[in-house]
Amino acid sequence: MCIGIPMQVSTIEPGHAVCVGRGERRRISTVLVGHVAPGDWLLVFLGDARERIDAERVSEVNATLDLMLGAMQGQGADGEAGFELPSRMSAVQLRQLATGG
Image (cartoon, rainbow, N blue to C red; front, side, top):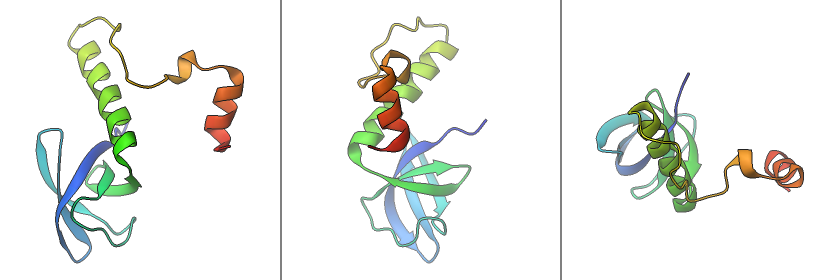
């Protein structure tokens, strides 16, 4: 299983960016997302940026990762995600999420 990590571009170089996120600093390939600029947010999988994301999405992903980390450390799953979890969405909301409309 691959988990995406939100990382913010710090510096750029051809085809790569140095990014920071969740306490890490990494050199990331940006070939799949094209040109990036310092301050941009990327969703990173295994050293490759796969998607540009906005600050709201960064918060959602980080909240989810925090809940997962807590569960792995034996904490209860009663934390607040900070956004509506798909398991709590209606059929209409899930359809909108899936279709983007």
